[in-house]
Image 1 (cartoon, rainbow, N blue to C red):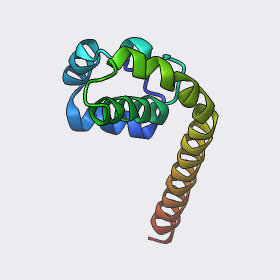
Image 2 (cartoon, rainbow, N blue to C red):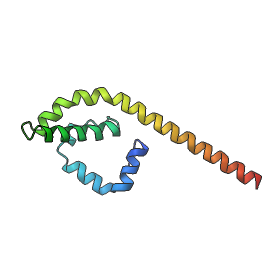
Image 3 (cartoon, helix red, strand yellow):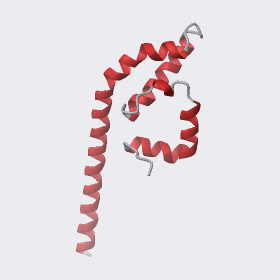
Image 4 (cartoon, rainbow, N blue to C red):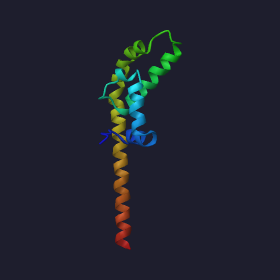
Length: 110
């Protein structure tokens, strides 16, 4: 239904609400520079970095100019972020399997 790509993204939906998140993204002028294929972490880091640089520049550079300058850095960091997300998901799945095995063993012993 939401086509979430990671546990972090799902938690963001749960904590902030699906509709609020969609509204924020629609109103976010940085969003037009974000590639849908980027990982959740890359998207969030890119937004934060562009906003921070815009504040640092004191408005001397537009958000558009800063975003265009930072796209190559986001593209370069995306494979690492995807690998990190995959590792977190793998560890989460392993913990879930361990919990299920312990629960089954307890039920069998009872």
